[in-house]
Image 1: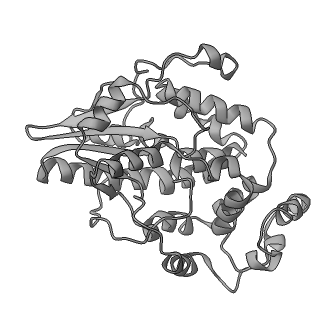
Image 2: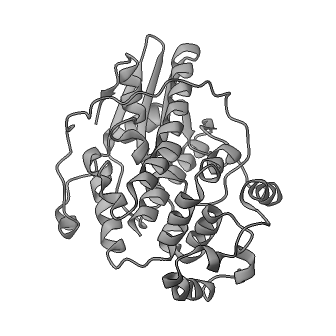
Image 3: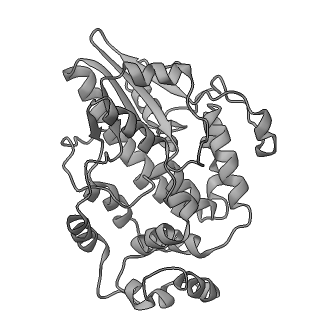
Length: 326
């Protein structure tokens, strides 16, 4: 289930409560693939078994600036264990000094009927085969076990796109992840408390539209990963957050997250959920740099700032100097 865990914890906000609010208009740009960057400071891997000896938190932070505008980039984990230490003096300085926070989707109030309508437009198709007909027969027992845990009857899944069925199963069966308060939520709370604006990089339609645009093969792989049990999940999750808190960007970019998944599906998933979104975030960062003044903190899933075609690499390839400051 590492395919699922990577997607949900590194890429997507932990809750379905995303709003269908309009972001800034997107302008297409050409995607480029830069050479892999050298290992940055703090990239020494720490074993989950040595968590008690892990270094003090130093999650990666980058900065981009001109004469009147400073932008900080910070990769987050969307669900964290209670009381997990991830902030340090440098990050607190960045948070305190930032005038405006950008999140993937800011929490600006939840209109349940509007949200259900959005999902209905995106994720419902009355012509679908049933879920049982779609998934591998070897997973039927696992699907029945899921049904015993959730308040949705089997028939309730049959008209859903496979991506939406996967996310709903995740929400109802992975409480340790789905109900956890991640770095994004904590950042929003800090800015709200200090009455500083929080903006969204994406709206709900765009955010879940990336899933909806995936091929059925990719959506089905996502769904089946939700139903496949992996006894190593807890250790993988623990190792991931330790690496993230230590600033180990190289580990976050490790393709082992997608071990055992068809490479063609991984490539499709990466393009839709990472590369294409990163390109749009880059557009917004460039707009802020050119048109606004002040200090901005752009925070999104850590995978968006790691490796090839990351936000950082795209900016550097376009000639911007992005400096890692932690």
